[in-house]
Image 1 (cartoon, one colour):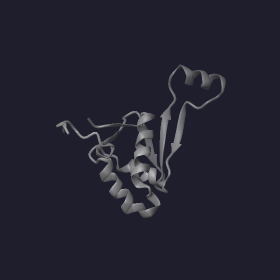
Image 2 (cartoon, helix red, strand yellow):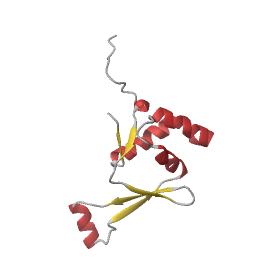
Image 3 (tube, rainbow, N blue to C red):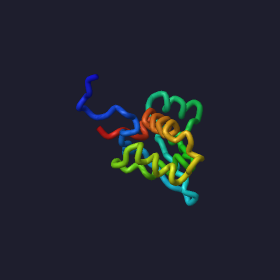
Image 4 (cartoon, one colour):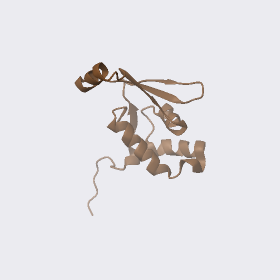
Amino acid sequence: MKQNSEKSNNYLDKIPIRTEHIVWSVEESGLVTLDVENKGIFHQFAQRFFHKPKVSHIHLDPMGSFVWCLIDGSRDILSLSALVKEQFGEEASPLYERLSRYFHILNSYGFITFKE
């Protein structure tokens, strides 16, 4: 079987990086809120005719908030999972599946990218 000398394709080895355009804040309770500006022609239409907001406020749950605050561009998902397991224990199960899905969602909405 041929082995590649290229970087691993394992999702847990990816290093997440927050995108610069996301404004976020931490409440006193420790929960994170992401403020996302709704741009584009469809959003402008919805804002004008359906009175949709110019900025959406996305409230993360305790585990999502914990992970969001740990994203620093140097830790991979596997390292973050160890910290989540230490903080939340069995509440985080199934740990790798949850984190993989969480990062996939953050990436699909453009809230994070992955370091090359």
